[in-house]
Length: 223
Image 1: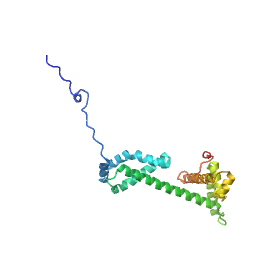
Image 2: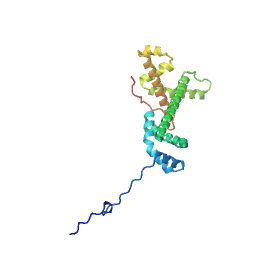
Image 3: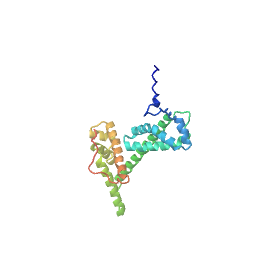
Image 4: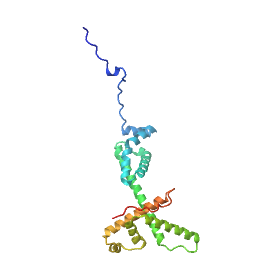
């Protein structure tokens, strides 16, 4: 009897397709070279490959999803503009992480200083003498003071107390520590946190479409 026929190869079985060899993913260096040749598809692949890494770095600095998303986009824009300066012998992932961290640090410092200046200006203004002789200026002054007072009212009680005692009543750290029966370090911490939170509230209220401070909502109490 003739030997049984061998079964057809798997690729030739009815209803099956020939197996395709997987195309290896291009290296970072290849993608960069293609980007520099104006290959938009290569840039999209770089963003897809490293977006999660950059987002995690940004999120560590902000702790907020929407702000981290904005920072992530800004970082990739900065990287795109600086791609021709990248040293091809270096590791791209390491370089990208360094750019992301440095950018986030710069943004944090700039934002922190902006918040500090806003609070310093408003507190100094609140202590200044009210304008006299100009009814329009007097009304404007009243609005600014009202804006600050509403922001203070939204602070947790202990933070508000610290800011008022220090910045509006002018008590020293030691005087505050004695009055509140707290260590001086705790007093300083509350003042700093109070100023930060107040600045965040005021800047948020100044954003387009959000010019009014929310009413009747205070943050959690602070120990």
